[in-house]
Image (cartoon, rainbow, N blue to C red; front, side, top):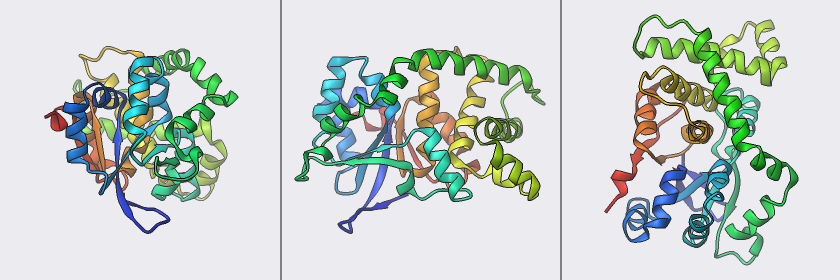
Length: 274
């Protein structure tokens, strides 16, 4: 969904996954130039998440190039999944696009705190973020284990992936997840005979569909990166375009019409490669 800034200008949002960010900054004359040509700064604002930063910071040289490349463009960082979900709960469904964004950056402002490198320096001095980053990979394994539990506990109707099973998996997963994160909301929805509300949060729908099409893919091999990809996907229903790797792009295309309000243009690196 386009966003209108305080100066009255309206822009579309383009979400980039970690691989896209990495290739763009490592190959500025190829993927970098292709990205700028397909998503010109006059129309689009790049968007990324704190999860991307966790991964990029593990590659200091790439991270430095990321700061250098994207530091000159206005850009946004999205909120973590838990905060996006809170915004959706407050809205009783789909949130406003402004409410899923954590911060905006620009190299053109007079306040240096608005600059990407300065914000990241502050962000990673915050104890909660420092702790989250230090435990990130350990938490990934916990999440992967929970995915395997979800797979065992779900009984598919067919031996191959299909839209009907996917929908049921997401239905069950939304209720189970909200029982853990927001039990009062679940109880209130039951009391009001409004269970459908629990199925109306785009971020959770997206993450659970992404999970289903992974764990029930017979060729899928679990790895820590998958958890990050799924976390990043939480804000995909709110952006106008996304650049991601082929596997995730195929998932987005399969589920786009099933996500509340999603109309995202889905691209891969191949689409922006010159």
